[in-house]
Image (cartoon, rainbow, N blue to C red; front, side, top):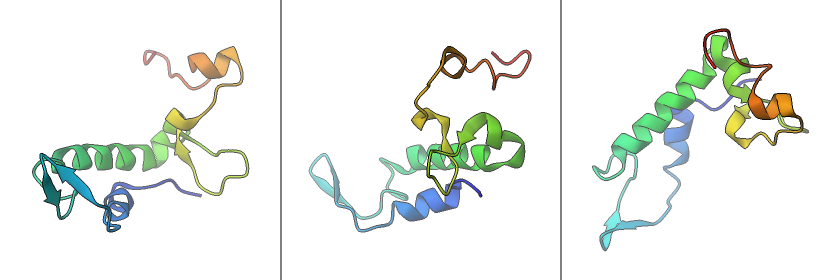
Length: 93
C-alpha cells in the first residue's frame, strides 16, 4: 500500500479542468508560469511523504481505505492524535 507520488499528483492535474487567471484561460496548470511552481512544490511534498522512512510520520490509512493519505486529512480521535505525540520523533516536535 503506497501513497500518492509527485508524478501522480502532476498527472492528476492534467484532467481537462478549466482554469482562468486574470481572464486568461490556462492550458495546463502544471506548466503555466502562474501555477507551475506551486504545482512543483506540492509534488515535492507528495514525493517526500512517499519515501519509506516518512510514510508513518506523514501519512495514514483511512478507515476502509486502500491507499495511504496525508495526515492533514486525519480526524484526530484523541489528545495524543491531536498533538501528534505518538508520531513525533525526539527533537522534531
